[in-house]
Length: 362
Image (tube, rainbow, N blue to C red):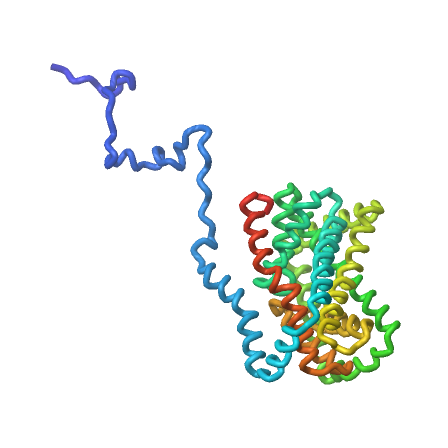
């Protein structure tokens, strides 16, 4: 009896074979779900490199860092903090309510600047909600990076390209800092209290190393962008995109009004909020001096990467004392301002942020 040759066996003549779950063929790459996915099935999400990193402890440490810094300062200044909290409890609630109204207007102004920094039209309601939720993110990342990250996610969800979304953040920051500087110059010219700020300016021995470090950082950045081509290409592309969007924005009067009008309104609303808190406590300083102290302290140390604005708070207390305020009242005013603008909206902002993520707005 002759056996058939292998060449005479066709696939149709082979008997059907059933593969058990433990069969070696069932574990082959060709039969794995990643390669043999049925048509229309949802693709499996790739595993991120960051998924194996300890993200939760890092986030917890970043969230607790401002509280630890504030707690350390409170422990070292216990009598001053106690007197400030006692005065804050007895503050005028109507002035605090007015300060809360100015805080809400500050979010509206921030939304106007965000819209003015981008040629695309954004929905007003979700944009305002994203700026409200961005306040909660600022307690995790320093220097306003949390708000910028939330805004970039919001713009990406609206279909804006990543380079254009990043360029809008740069234009927002530039307009905000430029307008704040202009407002500060106006208050310096209007109030004679600017002469007292001379005691807060560091001497030349400190300015020289700071200027040297800043100049060195700029020089190193320029050399890196000139020598490293893979680094220069995305940076130049981002700059071209930013300049193109900036030119287009400034050809539209409504965008110009939203960008620069909102940028000027933001420091005014923040100063008005701080003025209301000071009036509720009987700070005893004129409104223009209170606004000048707030703007000067924020401009002087606004670039310090401290979460929660701790460096600005310390400089603001010192500036108010220099202007003639009592230390306890100045401390109470700064604590009240921080509670009103940051800690009271923190929980609602976190809830809004979670709701926006669940609704895929972010």
